[in-house]
Image 1 (cartoon, rainbow, N blue to C red):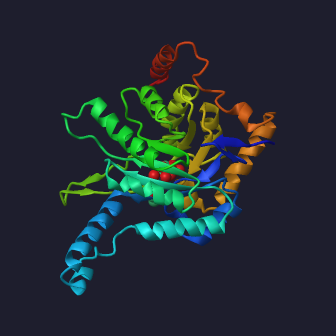
Image 2 (image 1 turned 60 degrees about the vertical axis):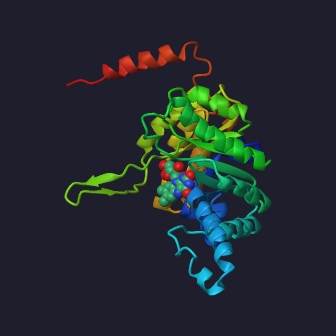
Image 3 (image 1 turned 90 degrees about the horizontal axis):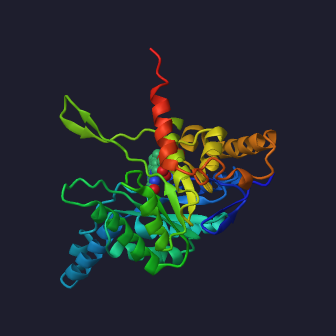
Length: 330
Ligand SMILES: Cc1cc2nc3c(=O)[nH]c(=O)nc-3n(C[C@H](O)[C@H](O)[C@H](O)COP(=O)(O)O)c2cc1C
């Protein structure tokens, strides 16, 4: 069975890969993922805040150094919560490249344009085959217009695109007035891929302690449905590759995402829960399903359930909505 796919211009034997997460902070784990069949490795993100902090430190260091080196070293920021500092990130990327033969996709994560985007150039020089750009922010100011919010992401993408020639993929938020229009704009900047979607971690409120409590919970398959809806809408409307991220836990989940239009399938929660070897279960399960259902290749299935050939997608969605509401029986 031919499971091959093209993602970001990379010819891959199948669509499955680990998504950005701490899974690949350890070289042994990276090797285990390759052994389990990963088509590519997506690295944990390097964050704007880390890069800005480092730039600030260097500036302070140079300034104070004129007076006293001993004093300068005490200015070093305390060991942060991040697994890898910027230089370690580049070393780690280099080590991953030496340890495995599959493509390595690095990840930069930020919310505003700034000097940090130049780092994409060092990431390219360190050997990354592609770069994910994760633009994560919550527009909370009432005077930010839709255009202002969208322009923030577009500016970051333009800045990164000016620095590098390797393919880029943007990890998107699901919250847009018109996602297809925004995706087209990204397309116009030459972005090679889009990842649907970022997960918005929702902090809780501790009503006794009157505190906002950050929580991280692994996903379930329920999160997939939002992704497949928008994969189905974007498939055929943009030239970029599409990856699903969020809610893939079984071969059936992956099959739905591919039918909706995914070229790549990124998995994190399921691998954190069952171990890296579970990637092989997903790959083999998908292959078995295709064989049982007499498909000749994965490509034959790709986008087969998208809205590409639906004459009036908006009407189709509206009718589905009305039908859904009638399903409830008391
Ligand atoms: C512990 C953890 C760390 C993560 N770190 C990153 C990150 O550094 N950058 C990023 O873009 N996404 C990060 N993610 C999000 C995942 O890449 C993925 O989008 C999300 O978990 C949804 O996929 P899943 O349902 O397969 O878990 C992280 C997720 C988890 C659980």
